[in-house]
Length: 55
Image (cartoon, rainbow, N blue to C red; front, side):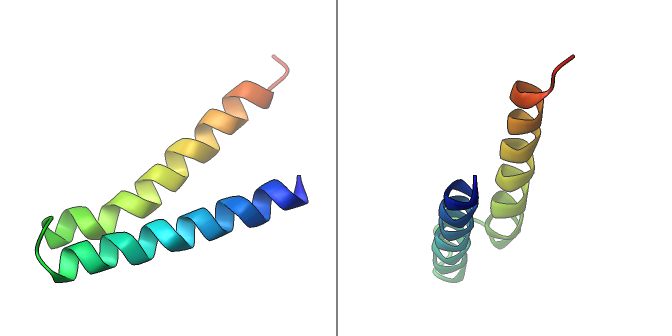
């Protein structure tokens, strides 16, 4: 679990840096670049919670 947490943290950091670069170069709108990483992290966490929930 600790290794998965480190891997997911690195993935989130990479995605955040990628969206930041795409937003600064105006390839994607800045609002989309700002909201994409936290929304994806929230959805991944919610999905993991739903799969590991007992009931």
